[in-house]
Structure formats: C-alpha cells, structure tokens
View (cartoon, rainbow, N blue to C red):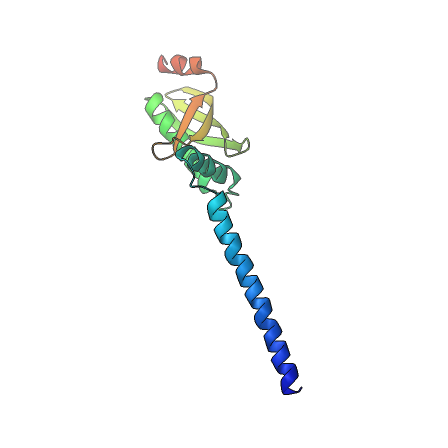
Amino acid sequence: MTFKRIWNASYGFLILGGVIGLCAWGTYHWDKKSNPPMTPAQKVSEAEKDFQDDADEDYAIETEGRQATMDFAKNNLPGWTVKGLSSVDQGAHVFKLAIDLEKASHVTQLSVTARKFFPESGDPYWRVTADDPSIIKQLETK
C-alpha cells in the first residue's frame, strides 16, 4: 500500500470513530434529558418487576418463601411441629405451600400462600396467609 492509501484509510477510520463517538455522546445526553429520575413509587415497581423476572436458578427466592412459611407456622401454631413443606411457584414467585403438621397424635396439612411485598418506605418482606383462616382457629383448639 502506498502512503496515500494508508493515510486515506486512517482518515476514514478517524471520521467513522468520531461519528460513532458523537452518536454515543448524543444518545447518552438525550436519555438523561428524556428520562427524569425515578420517583419512589417507580423504584419500588422496578424492584418488584426485577424480583418477579428473576429466574431463581439457585432457589434463593423459593428458600425465602419457605422460611417465611416456617416462621408463620411457628408464630401462629404453637405446639405444632412442622414435619415438612411442599411448595409450588404459582408464577412471579408467589408460592402455594402445604405445611405438614403434627401435634401429639394429630396430623394435618395446612395450605398457605407466600408472597413478597415491596413497600415504598422500607425493605421488602414476606407475608404468608392461610388459604382458609378458620383452620388456624381449629388447630389452636387441638
């Protein structure tokens, strides 16, 4: 190649690089102007959406839901022993769980739903509710 061809090729790359750089700079600054900072409600919505979209490949989310269910049983069913849990992800990490319970000679199962909540003013937390709350009252009397 001659010096002139090398010079023209280098000059072309310089112009192309400058155009790409300007486009990237313009896009960055355009986005900053068109996307104002998120409100607290938007941040919470984003956190919840990220949570729901998490693939949970290491089962950390399901483990959190199961632990919340164990805590629920311990706090609401004194005297009962949790023998085991069975959980199914209903979608978006809302879990349907069956709690296998035992107390003296009584054995029963309780169906619950575990769901994570995202408040604007604090850390997310799990809430577990019995599918049939009247069963909790019945178990308290046994």
